[in-house]
Every structure is written in C-alpha cells, then in structure tokens.
Length: 234
Image (tube, rainbow, N blue to C red; front, side, top):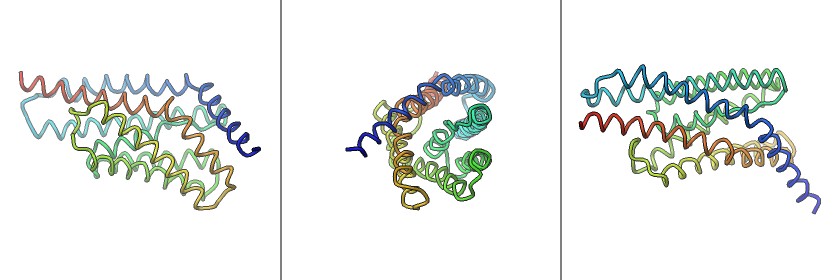
C-alpha cells in the first residue's frame, strides 16, 4: 500500500511541476508559430507552385529547417531554465520524433544529429554523468527511429492526415517515451523507483505538452501542403 501511495505522490509531484512551468513550456509554442510564419513566407509563399516534384523537395527541406530551428530553440530555452532553476524541461524529443514521421531518413538524420549534440551538451551540464549522457543519446535515437516506424505504418502522406492519423501519431510518441524509460530500467543503472519516476514524468507530460505540440505541428504542415495543392489546381 505504501508503494501505491509513493507512486501517486510521484505522479502528483510531476503534474504540479509541469503545471508550474506550463507558461515556459508554452513559450515553445509561441516560438514555433513565429518560426513557422517566417519560414513559410520565405520558402513556400514566394515559391512557384507549378514545379511539381521540385516543390515536394522544397517542402521537405522547409519541414527539416523548421524542425532544426525548433530543436535549437528548445536547447536555448532549456539551458535558460537549467541555469536559473536547475530543472530540465524540453520539447526537443517531440520534434525529433516528428522528423522521423515527416522526413526522408537522410533529412531526419540532420534533425537527429542536431538534437543529439544539443542533448549531450545539455545533460552534461545538468548532470555531468557520462552514462546518463549515453542513455539520453539512445533516447533521442529511439524517438527518431520510432517516428520512422510510424511513417512506414501510415497509409496516407502529409496533406491527407485525418484526426485519427494525428491521434495515432501522438499516441505512438507516448509509446516511444515509455519504451525509452523502460530501457533505463533494463540498463539497471538506478533504483526501480527512479525508473518508475521517469515513466510517470513522461506520462504526466504527454497530454499537457507532447500531444498539443505534435498535433499543432502536423496541422500546420497539413495546411501548408493543402494550400499548395489548392494553388496548383487553381
């Protein structure tokens, strides 16, 4: 019974921490909208629509640059919070996961590499433990690979995503999070309660942060592609 109360206490603590820093986390959304607005104007709205496959390549590059931009934004915001409050909260893995879902493996690799370097730097400054940095490197890789797996499972491409597809993609992100946390337990580098603590933190953060971030990004990309298709047909 004490174990159950301990787990409930951990869950409440994580929920309280996320709600306390929710304005900081939502700052990521504001930067996403600003970055999307600027990059969309520079790369899509000024680009001719009658180039067929060439536009599809440009759209892939546009998505890649936006995701790299968001990974870098996440790094700067997280380091600011880390230096002030010694807390690590980041949406970086959501964007790495989306890179696997939306991009070709080569272009997703650029997002993954950027996130990997940022993650190693962040965790070394936060914890200073070599094995933890190694695990977090695996964590980033798991998210990217999981996104690629989701892409292979989807029967539609960007521009034709339904709400069912969006929920499926966001749900798989939660599974990837839990799988990565379970890996930490299997590595046996900490106590069982610490591993469960990581699991609970990721479960608590999914509906408040990951779910809206993933759906917002996919809706924006869906809308951008549909806009191009409408302009080309017109």
